[in-house]
Image (cartoon, rainbow, N blue to C red; front, side):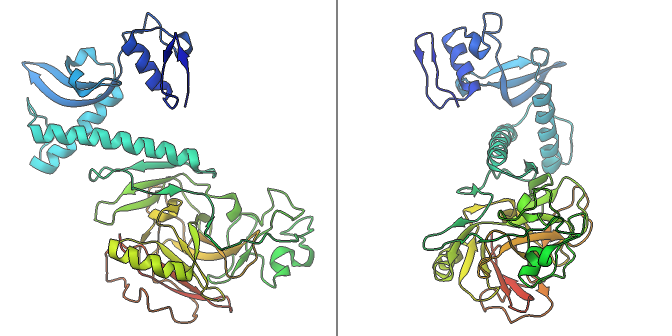
Amino acid sequence: VFGLLILGCSVCCKSSWNQLQDLCRLAKLSCPALGVSKKNLYDFEVEYLCDYKKIREQEYYLVKWRGYPDSENTWEPRQNLKCIRVLKQFHKDLERELVRRHRRSKPPRHLDPNLANYLVQKAKQRRALQRWEQELNAKRSHLGRITVENEVDLDGPPRSFVYINEYRVGEGITLNQVAVGCECQDCLLAPTGGCCPGASLHKFAYNDQGQVRLKAGQPIYECNSRCCCGYDCPNRVVQKGIRYDLCIFRTNDGRGWGVRTLEKIRKNSFVMEYVGEIITSEEAERRGQIYDRQGATYLFDLDYVEDVYTVDAAYYGNISHFVNHSCDPNLQVYNVFIDNLDERLPRIAFFATRTIWAGEELTFDYNMQGGGGKSPRGRGSDMGCEDPTPRHIWVIEWTKENSFAGVLRCSS
């Protein structure tokens, strides 16, 4: 954002660069700092196209100009428009909607008002999703980029969702930092005292490619901020964050938003972490009753040793917020300890159960099983693979013997 004073003309302190350029053009002022000169002062940018008609053999488009109100929209012949990308997207949306409505793709000479209105709403939705995508990428701290796509309906970004990269600690909860770290010269090949996993009487989790080699249900202990090893240590995987480019997309079968990978993911590789607001189980019960009435909730109980804390990703979360259920999943849950060794507060990581190809949706089984474990709580016991309804309340129960059973009851 910028706050500038241009030739004695004041502007809003939170205007974007493009908005400032528009203000200059509206006021017919040149500003070298903004790249607005007398030569391009009257160059106008197409925001989106609103309508289409064909008169004789000439194509015309109703143009919404960036920075100008709808009352300033004008019909322009195609040769006046240099916005190739906008034109291609307009015709792509038009053809797709014509096929859906009339099973044909060739545009008529004039669009009916309902179709033209749909194209305007689609253009506005796409701009809103692009802004959301930029916001998500501005907030992420991980390497993997996020894209957003909706070619199914007119739904825009979800309301009241804040992207975070790590747990947001709720009131009355403290995450205690680890006091000691390992002194290994090579944590994989020559672990001193078993490295951090050995100090906790557990096995080293990864091979030299960073792939998990533990059975599902066994905890992962990574090196921490007090360890002598560096960033490239093979026992630092989950803490490096998401490393794959992923896409949040609208599913075409009524399951709401989903997530797919844009890159090949190798079997047993770390994919993402489930993050949200850590709250007490008592607070989770209170919120759960509210969420039940709203028909949507994202509660994930942490029951590795006792039922004390829950992760709520309804409003604060990362891309895992949008991962859907499957009875044939490609992700598996592991609990991870890094800088906090409180067994009541594991970090929850998803690893690939098999090779996942570019373009494939990421899923995991809300009714997961991991080698036994105590029976899950009654909350959510109605979830089964025969129920295709998209839901998002996750109840994961861990046992001290390093196995778990879990049931997710969710709704979206």
